Image 1: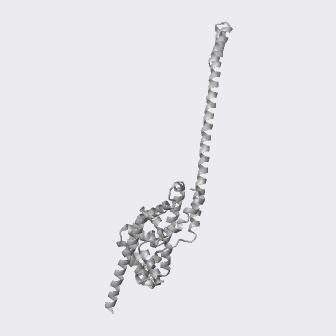
Image 2 (image 1 turned 120 degrees about the vertical axis):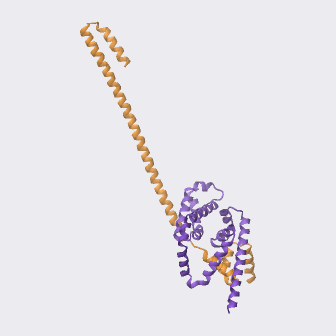
Image 3 (image 1 turned 30 degrees about the vertical axis):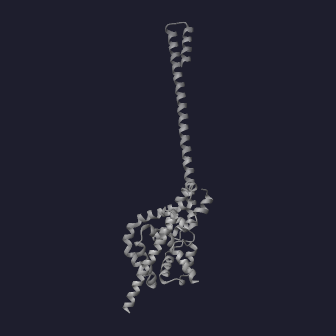
Amino acid sequence: MKTNYQELLNKYYNASTSLEEEQLLMDDTDQLDAIDQQWLNVCQQHQNVAPKKLQEDIWDKIEQQENTKRKFTIKHWMSVAAAVLIVVSVAIMHIAKQRQLDRIQKMALLEEALFTLSSDMQTRKAPVVLYEDELITCYDKK
Amino acid sequence: MRTAQFKILILPLSERIYPMAKRLLNSDSEAEDAVQEIMLRLWNKRKELGKHNNPVGYALLTARNFCLDMLKKKKPELTIDKHQLQVANHRAVEGDYESREAVLIVQEILNTLPTQQKSVIQLRDFDGFEMEEIAVMLQIEVPHARVLLSRARKKVRQQMTKIYSYENQLSRAAE
């Protein structure tokens, strides 16, 4: 039995033992001399064991992070959509306003033409047809 | 890397990383925080991790580098608390003076070893990593890691034998 341990110890010092074999040596240090015992005991003292629920705690944290990310993504896309909606409505309003302005301008021109026509008719008494043509041309242009 | 793969392959590593983190950071809570942070980083990098040839090795290397970075940041605090630590240690070991003495002797011996030998022996004999994992973490070949470990173990034994035989001589002389 002792020779087995000696062989194992030789393997250990040549760094060719597996972790299981090393554990075997640590579990049975009585078979070894004082120095090896001391060394393996120190190794055992240094070995730290992870807390029981470490993996679960980590997974909870990962899930928590993912949920926060998901919420942030939803909020992010919602604000992007809102911004796009605002831009589109502003553009539509601008176009509508522009069209309204154009119509007002046309109406003003028409009004001006009609006013000129009526005043000309009153002062010069020119033939109506000629003014009608001018009016139509002016309206078409605008 | 998919969630299921991450849960099977990477998440269980947290329990194996913890002893190293605890040894390097010398604190339970800091080791726990470090392991959680490492796992979160690996989770965020899971796409890269999936493409890697050796995801486990990559994870362990990331973990070691993270702990060493934390240790560097922590150093000033440690020097301030050194005295307090010594006092606390002395109190804790009153009942077990011999084993505490052995730990201190081993620590002294380990500090005399070349950096790579020290790292290999700590990763193997204190943290319980496989040789392949140690080789990845230290970015060396497995046979080289074995040579370093063998030399380190032999040196530690040699030094311990010297110290204990000297102590024995002293006690005999005193008698």
